[in-house]
Image (cartoon, rainbow, N blue to C red; front, side):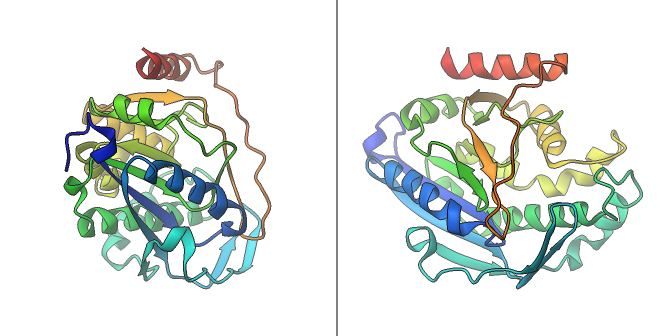
Length: 266
């Protein structure tokens, strides 16, 4: 790990995760991000994949065979295939099923959330995070409207134990589709699967956004954010029509978003 004040010597770890959904649209912009960062930083890319051949998600209207993941996806990222099983987290899933089904899909979304968070748990255990200055973690199915981010400003913001993300899509929590942080914060965020049962002691249902918010409060992690538009891509190439607005009708969330914007710009 270098002196992060010298951006040309600093190192950045990209952790990409998912099931290979939407790569026909998302790989290009994500590669642009990686290339942009590598111009001034040392970069290492990891791709953690739930190794499944089919998708069956009635809520998102995705049912079918997943496309084969290209051999040299994400500029030759180190691919790690993980079996999509929840043997060690069955008790957690059973606990989740005792609470309200937030998406009314027979708890399939809870199952998928666990699979997703389990990938991040694996990543935190296998990657030597502290050997990097910055961690960029993102889903493989998100499409950036403009992948040319203000990296110098973002990295400066996360030097102070802040978590950086977009100010869209907080959904009563904090947007969990991508984040940028230092290794210390990343280790906490990547292991949030371990706090699900604790979270449910205070809430009657769970979403990824609310769990992330809970973790940042518990560990006193501040949020910095800016206007970054991202959309989710379905396995057949459909782009989900995201609502890129700040939820001003939820006053507490609105104030938290404003605070995070101030944290980034000032």
